[in-house]
Amino acid sequence: MPGDSNFLHRVKVTEHLKCECQCKETSSDCTPAQKYHPHICKCLCPEETKKHCEKWKGLV
Image 1 (spheres, rainbow, N blue to C red):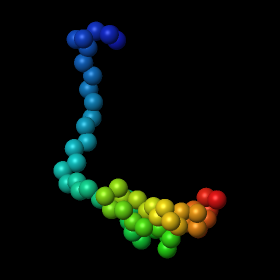
Image 2 (cartoon, helix red, strand yellow; image 1 turned 90 degrees about the vertical axis):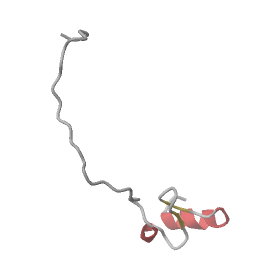
Image 3 (tube, helix red, strand yellow; image 1 turned 120 degrees about the vertical axis):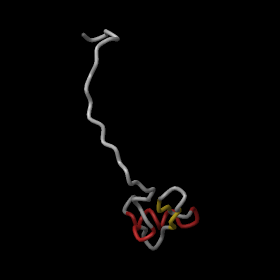
């Protein structure tokens, strides 16, 4: 019964035996105006070229 601490549920658990850390976004995903930052796995526009960079990405 719900709320009863003696009620058991059976659940399936997926166990991943082989994992690795990897960025989904890589430097090849960056536009020419962007700079890749591997520690955060992102392409970012440098502050000094942000307006041009955002225009390149279609944000402006």
